[in-house]
Image (cartoon, rainbow, N blue to C red; front, top):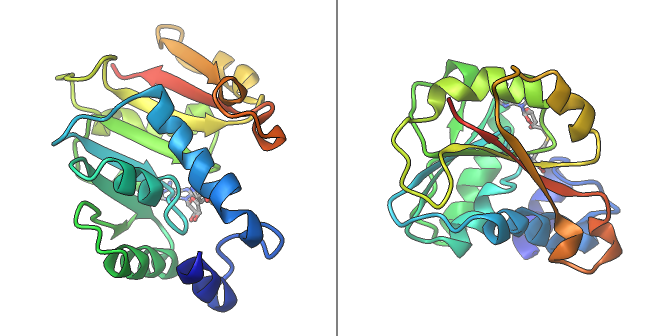
Length: 187
Ligand code: SAH
């Protein structure tokens, strides 16, 4: 909380009104992904459009043996991610300034929140998802989404397998009403 408050005074990472709800709106929301899937030690996870480090930083704390690669096209946001992960002593974060589609990286999963439509996420992510799966579900994209994911899913390639889970089934706070974990299987 202190680190985010400090940075939020310098650059607008989360809205002023939201900063007091950091643990609920940003940290717990990010951890909904951990409810959906337990990442293996040694797994690689790309956070597409990480902003100030969501969901990558909470997940990196939760899964200390999984390697997280937060990416954002805006350098000052990645500067914050570097600083916060250094000061938290996180060894499993490697943050990069880049547009996601320009990266040369292979990962097990792409996680993301509040970045783009499922179609754009699909276009930017699929080439980064390795074919060899070692988790309970095949490698793919895990996105935190609002109810709009239903319309967005219709624009995905027909053969894509999509699954959703209502976060309100895990977390009772009203903030999580109409919030979903959406999985798109890699191909
Ligand atoms: N995921 C964070 C930030 C969301 S704001 C959170 O939930 O709090 C969206 C972020 O995505 C912005 O920082 C923007 O710079 C980044 N972004 C959008 N398209 C991108 C792309 N193609 N590659 C990398 N970053 C992207």
